Image (cartoon, rainbow, N blue to C red):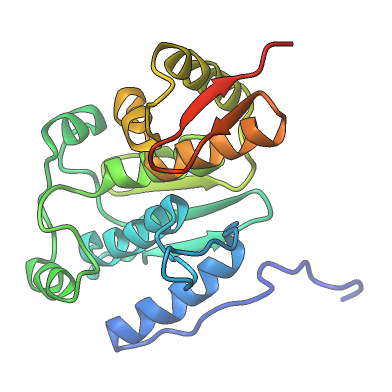
Amino acid sequence: MTGDAPTHYSYRLSEEENLFRFYFSIFERLIKKTDLPFALRADGFATDDQPQLTAIRDALANLLIHSDYFSPVKPRIRVFIDRIEFLNPNSLPKDLESIIREDFTMPRNPIVTKIFRVIKLAENAGSGIDKMINGWKAYYENVPAISGGIDYYKITFPLVKGTGVSEKTSEKIILLIKENPSISAKEIAEKLGVSPRAIEMQIAKLKKKNIIIRIGPAKSGQWAVVDK
C-alpha cells in the first residue's frame, strides 16, 4: 500500500462512562474553538455570560439529554474550520417551528434531564433551542442550521460571522437613538428582540466608527448621532 491515509480527525475524545465528566471534557474543547472576546464585569472579573457560549452550552446539554443511547447511531460532535456540528441519534418530537413557538420539550432521558437541571446545566422549561438560535445569532450574526430525519437531527453552528445582519441592526439602533437619545442598551435589546450583549457590541462598533457618541455620564447621559 502506497501513500498516506487521509487524516479524518486531529483530535478525538475516547468514550467516557461518567456523563458529567464527558460533558465538561467536551465543553472545554468546544470553548477553545468558539470566538470569546475578553470582557470584564463591573466587579472587575472576566465574564462568561456571552450569548455564543450559552448557545454551545445548551447545544451540548441538549445532545446528552435527548440522545437515544440504544441507537446504533452514536451522538457525535464534529468541529471544522468553519462550523461545529451536533448530531443527535433521535428525531425531534415536533417540527422545529412548533417547538420554538410553543417552547415545547419532551426529554428522552428524564432522569438525566432532572440532574442536569439541578446543577443548572439545562433549562427548567422549554427545549433551549431558542437560546441556541438567538445566542449564536447575537454574536456570529448567523443562525444555526437545524436539519434531520426520522431517526436523527443535526444542529450546525457556523463559525464565520454573517454579513448584512450587523448593518441592519446598526441602522435600527441609530433610529432608536434619534427617537430617544436617553434609551439604554437593555431597552434597545427589548425593542429589537436580541440580547443586551449583542446590542452592546453593536454600540461599541458604532462608537468606534464615530457614528454615535455618548454625552454625559453612563447612567444619566444621552446618545447623539454624529452628523456627517
